[in-house]
Length: 481
Image 1 (cartoon, one colour):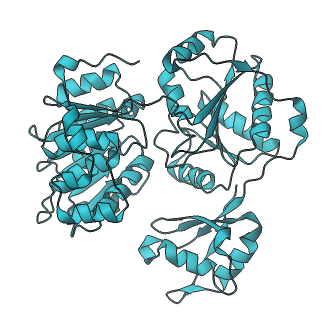
Image 2: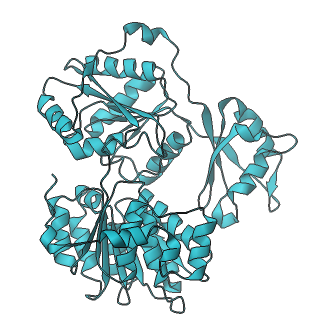
Image 3: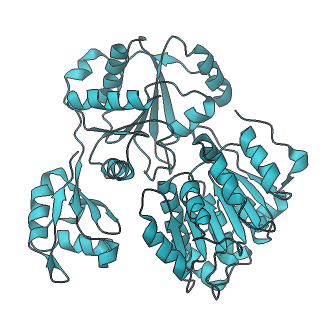
């Protein structure tokens, strides 16, 4: 639930400060940071950066409220890098994230911002990965730690992580951390940090629980708030009435999938059981679908996300909690199999489509008990939504859209000194694939996921079989979809 922000307790970034701070060159950043920002093609700051960076660089506590994809990671990332003392290998900044995927994204983004700054060491501490290598890395020291509350807390309890020298604490996507039940873990981590630290809290929404945290752990915070069109103006929202039974709802979902014919569709369900059931039903009917919910272990979750982000499967069926912090580009279509429990969840769901200026479609199946939630949505968006009829049954006779790619699991990764360019080289060449037959390449610690055109899988595996890496044969296989 949204609450009114207590403006009397918060200072707001002055308008003249925002106007002056449109370009990064107007900020007091080191030359190597400015040079790197320019090389990355960042011309002007985004609104959250223009509001947030000046007070962050002044050492003030900041609450940043902005949607995903607004540039908030660069805002706090540059704030962290601007004040690092690289001569000391003690932890000076800690970023807490709700999920491993988001922590990985944040780590990559900060590393990219720091690539021209010498000797900056960034360490990621997340669950689902072995603790021992993380302990070894901590023994060698780090400037910036990015992690999830559970794993960071574990290293604090075993005295493997010391935060006595911490200068900046960042709570990224604080609302999601609370939704996922991390309140106790977050409180425990904060309790191990110095009182005089700088605290930055970034959140897409500002519920009462976030306000409560801010009041307890922040010192006269500045509010950087970016208003946005709730659906970005790029999302066509469709609302379709369907019967109350599971069979009627599943048919409605099939009709929408067949009508939209999307390469990538994200379907939101309410429970873990329903998510798995819907996925199983779709697969049984010939659709390329995977499920994402809390009963998956980390390796299953990773492979599920790889297959969907690589466009090796067309439909991802997910719960709201499991879908938090996903590193997935904009999808073509979002379908609410069940209407979201509140307006903010609905906005986050449909925000997965229509990103970066592209157009997207969000379809919501309405049951007989959804009228009050529909009224709240119309009030929030400031418009009246018309319900439309479901697509005609004849669309079910058209062929099911086939995912265009397949994913190869290649048994070598970062620890074998492999980069994406090496994998690209293995797959192409005189006897290999063309560039347009190769999709996303994700290099992990000991393996690599590579997307290739579905009709080029055999040729890709044959090409890899003729190659070696550091004198050794390369093992590779097609992942099961």
